Image (tube, rainbow, N blue to C red; front, side):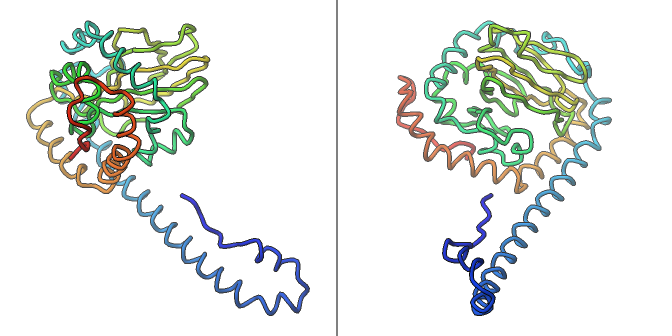
Length: 306
């Protein structure tokens, strides 16, 4: 967020005046300083409120991790076998169609949003413009624009049970995503490798102390509540289709998750992200749709997550 200091060139010159002139100018500077202090105060309160609410929500979700782990109907290893879910086979079978659609978007990569443009909280781990995304599903809701521009990918995603999130994740050369954790063990994350640098050993992810390397056309499953970190120490982009699904669990655990999820979807965090996505779609998203000109796009982009 930009902080307006309210100091104009003429006011900077005030600081060079003699003592008498400074005294005459003091009331003006006091008024400006008061406005600035109030603005900083409101911004500070907003940041504090967001941080506190976020921490409370995070603790609520993390407090259920052991419960969800005990209720899990699949293995709870940090890196489950990729055959844990039957749908990973279809992802790997149709990966070239998915890669082609991702490549069409990447031909206009400057129009893709950065992650923090959609989810402001991601600024903590990615403050620059070297992590770009393109959503097809977010928070369990379908992006009509994303799915219209990538119909083959959408057809595969539509057959994945309990799908929560799906987007193309594009890491620029030299990008590093510091160690972080997801908020709930009620989900399992999948990466489908689409574009992996030739120097694959220099493009890696560490999950709970175990090193992972992507391969084009192959899936990787992991528990993103475990500490993980990503490096792309190459001069090429790394592109994956990132998918989150709800973990297969006992009926009681699924009911608990349903209640928590209903509250979470009404939170300011989610409402803000949805609003950011809609604003992107109404501007650069429309430009992207015109640039791609997919023959199956139809009558034009439809707002996401409505």
